[in-house]
View (cartoon, one colour):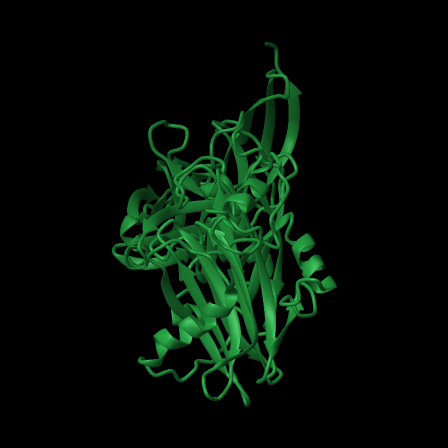
Length: 508
C-alpha cells in the first residue's frame, strides 16, 4: 500500500521527535500528539473554573462523535474507540471536543462546532499523539467561554506535547494562547508560530491553568544524565483564589519532579520528567517540622494511574509518604495516612519534684522510617495537659543547622537529649534538628520554666555537649573545616540566655 505524503511529513532525521513524526504520519494525518485523560468532571471544575456542560441525549453520542471525526481525515488503526470529552453550548452553535484512539495506542483530539441541527460547520481542528491522551478543561471569564487543552505523547524515552487556550464566542472559536489566530489555517502565521513555540516546551494542566516546562538541551533518552523537562512557570488563566499560593505550588512541583524522576512514575522508568499533572493540593496542619500539604496527581498517559503525596514544607521539604494506584486507592491511602503517626513519651522531673510526661507526636519519613518528624509536643502532669508546643513556639536565627525537629532511632546521637542544660535543677529537652547528619549535628533545646509551668524554646547547639556543672558552663565540641577539633564555651547570662565566652582550636 502506498502511504500518502501528508502536509506534515518530515525529512529523514536522527532525532527521536522527528522519527516519531515519521511513524505517526503512517497512521495519523497530523503533526503531533496528545496527553492524558480528561479528569473526572469534578476535577475539571477544580482545575479551571466552572464547567459548562452540553445537553446531549445518549442516543446522539455516537453520531455526534462520528460527525466530528469524519472531517479530520485522520488515519487510526482498526478497533477505533471514541469518547466525548466536553462541549459548550453557544447562541448559534455548540463547541464539541472528542477523543479518538486505537489499541496501539494512537489517539487524536478533535475540536469543532455544530449548528443547531447538530451538523458540523466550518473546519475541525485536530491533533494527535502516540501513547497519550488529550486533557481538556473549560471555564468562563468575563462572559466568554474558554476551552483549555493539553496533548502530550511519548516515543523511545522522550516525551513532547502541545497545548492551547481557545475562546468560543457562541458561533466559532479562535486561539488566544500561546498564539492568537486560527490554527485550522495551516498556512497562517499563527500556525507557524504555534509549532515553533512547542518545539522545546511542554505543558501540564494544573488548578487554574497550566504548568509550563522547558526542554533541556543536554537530554539524550538513551544515555543517563540530564532530565528532559524542567519546570519553568505556572500560567494562570482564571483569577479565582486558591488555598495554596503559587510559590508553594512551584516548590511542590519541584518536590514531585525530584521524587518521581527515577521511581513512582507512570512509566516505572529512570530519568523521567513531567509525567504527573497536579489535580489538587490541600493545605493541612502546621507542625514543628513545617506545614503539611496533601498533593493529588494524575498520569498524563492513563486515567488508571494516580499518585498521592504528603509533604511537610518547612526549612526543608520533607516527604512523609508517596502512594500510587487507582484514584480510589490513592484517595483511600491519603485518608488513612494518619495511621502512620505514633507517639513517644518521655518522663522528666523538675527541680521542685514535679513529674512531667512529655508526649511527642511523630511521623516516619518516606523511605527512611528510622527518621521521625516531630510534629507536636504535649506536656502533661498527673494526666492533666499543661502545654501544647507547636510551630509558633519555635524560632531560630543562629548559624547552627536547623531543618526541623526529629527523632532518629538506632544511635544515641539522634535520640532525645534529657539533661539540665541551664543548671537550675530541672530536666530540659533537646531534640535533633538536622535531617541527616552533617559533621556537626545540631539539637534544639527546650528549657523548663517553673514560674510559667511550661517549656520554652531556648537555642540550637551542636551535640554532643559537655556540661561543666562546677563552672556552670556549656561546652560545644566542634569539627572544624579541615576536621580539626574546636571548642566553644558558653555561660548563662542574667537574662537567661547563652553567651559565648571562648572559642578555640584544639590540638589534633
